[in-house]
Structures are given as C-alpha cells and as structure tokens.
Length: 222
Image 1 (cartoon, helix red, strand yellow):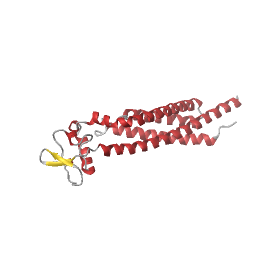
Image 2 (cartoon, one colour):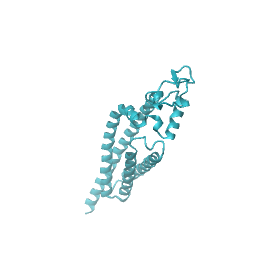
Image 3 (tube, one colour):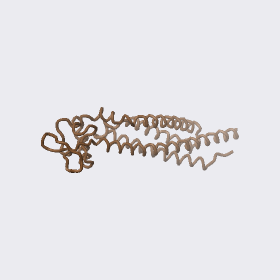
Image 4 (cartoon, one colour):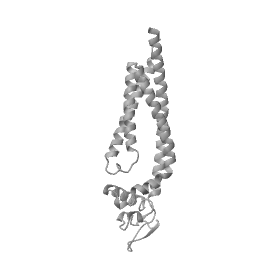
C-alpha cells in the first residue's frame, strides 16, 4: 500500500500556508509591540507573539513531515494543532466573556488621558475632531483640568458644555465609538478564528490520515 500523494501534497501546501500565516501574525504582533502608541495599551500582544511563533514552528514541522513522510513530525504537528485548537476555543470563550469588561479595562489603563504618551494623546485628539466627541469614558473630565482644542464644539447639533468658563466642548465621550469599533472587530476576529479552527480540523485529519498510511506502508514492507 502506497502513501496517497494527493493527501501528502495537500498537507504540504496547507502547512506552507499555515507557516506563512504564522510569520504574518508574528511580524504584525512584534510591530504592534514596539509601536510607541499601541505597545503598552493593547492586551495580549505577548500571547499573539507566542501563538505566531508556535504556528510558524508547527507549519515547518508539518511541511517537513509531509514531504519526508516522517511519522514523528506528523504526530508532533497533530498534537500541536490539537493543543492550539483547544486554546483557541478557550480564548474564544474568555474573549466573549471579557467583552463586557473592556470599558473597565479602558478606564484603568487609559485614564486620565493627560498621563498617556504624547503619541496616544495626538491619536485621541484626531479621533475627537473626526468623531465630534471628547474624552474616552466620562467626557471632557477624562483630560483633567486642561481640555484640548480638539474637543471644541464646532457642530451646534451636538450636545456641548462650557469648559474653562470660556469655550464650549463636546459633552459626548468617545467610548461609544470605540466600543462599536471593538464590537465590529470582535465579530471579524471570531469569524477569522472560526475559519482557522476549520482549517485546523482539516489539517489534523490530513496529518492523521497520512500518519496511518505511512504506518501501513512500513508494515507492508516489513
């Protein structure tokens, strides 16, 4: 009994794409980690770096195991995929539960805004100008005693209030906009995670099929 060449090369191509995706995840995570705006604010970057590294290693093991018909490499690949699949399910559950705590996390990490880096403050001011809002959670008070000019109320249709006794600023905080973006991002992330999970199941099926065929081939030859 010979090894099915179609399964062999399908598994190789799958793992090549898997390896490339791991490299992309690793590269983007490292970029965000060293970025002065997002590096200290986005949670889970270290986890993403670890996941990207693991996927890159597993992709290599899968490619090598498929092309060389190595049962050891294929088993390591299968076990690694199974562990990542379980972690992905756990992370999805924890992420769904943790969405409600995002506002609490933002309050703890980002307020008061005047204590954040100048780059993040610039980012917030651009957001305020474009979204016609002020502050992040509670409104202008998030900036403390000095409210930036980006909060100046230039749209009379928006709800505004006096600040510094001289000018009007937007009363609406930007948290609703941020939360809506996060919610959309969560939906997209869950969709991507579901797609990755399906690909993992296919990869595990290919790996185990090829593993069994190699074992039967060796048994026939012996």
